[in-house]
Image 1 (tube, rainbow, N blue to C red):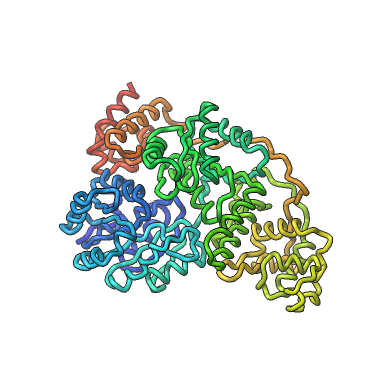
Image 2 (cartoon, helix red, strand yellow):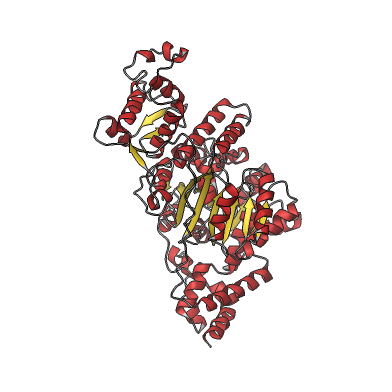
Length: 600
């Protein structure tokens, strides 16, 4: 009789219950149902496949895009007493052979590999003899041509379902819109499976966007209120990354640079310091990305506009993975838009790819100009409805709003009358009465809406449309050619059943509002701060001895639980959430001594 998921969860990982959504995925995979799971960062997707993998009789193969990500996952499993294996280019041939033997002999049920390592004839033939129970594709958006992080080598994975018909296919991502989800499901299991979306909302993140005025002063105002916290500052270029890291160091903030132009050994050293020590600020390009699983990152600050909503969501997802309140802030300027457009236009020769990326950028610009709840705008992009959150800048400090129902009806009518098949530029030309060959060829100069919006200039209508998209009145058809499409809310405005308000569109950028001091604090008011600090220091020392990130020993939530429960015996320590049998054996006595010393 095989173990139950609850037995494995408690007996191996030390958790008394699943988080919301986890158990459903575990049950589907154990039943052999191919499943694509879209789950927000920090929701615990790893347990969703690790638990069934430990229950299956045959091995499971996990495909991961980065060596660092694989090493952290394996280190975390080994800390819990699970003998997982990993094969990658960062290890010697002898090490990789030893890892393979553990899988072949049945001592390791989980094998982590990159797609390039997996999809070789030799490896696939060897795996056929082992008859894997499950293939897990992590960061699955990388397989999709619609995904913002498409990696060609991931596309090879589409052959797995045919070559291993008895294996369950599991895919996980935190970032996938509707088009990307459908493409992943088709490639990995020919759409013969389930797509489960457990939401994109990260309610512990406070979202904010500010016009860029004096970026150095704005950044320092933000960081001055958050000294002593770990965070990431994202920059667009290597040069700016070095400049910002040097500036922050001069201001007494421990800041380290990270970009592809640094020597590999410097990048590794800086990443190790950031992952293992407290209150370090990493100043980075997007080269610092997947595989960063530090739970207590309290803020992510974008000095420049990201490339798309998907990229933005991935990058802010590195904050607050422990579930505690964290902040994300973005500075938004016209130069960023120009540079992003240039990057897209210079990205290869594929015109469809360029068009798609321009439309993704349009959606991000719309998010920046949101008039209502910013979180609702973010969720809307990924196909979810959201209520006003009370935890974003537009909720906490609402902008000046103007009744734009008349202008909205002009816009929506022009879109509807042209078949919801055209992008913003053509619709604006119609509203302003422009004479162009495209308009005349289609007879759009005879529409009732032709010239009806001539009182407003082109920049007004561009900002107005972005706000309409952000507010969920319009959507952008990314799969097609970027045509504007009315949503149900937009149709209600067109029919006069709802009103439309928009954020004031100034002729020039207004000065940024004064920086609010962060209200983000961990809820540790009921525990002894000195005791928690001593437990963190012990954790840091134990992690350093083992050359692993601190959270591999215990997460902050587990240390806080220890401070509240004050266990005095190993039996009592085993009841602390996140303390499994292996960690109890390896770390329990040391933490009991620290707790006893703190109580003395």
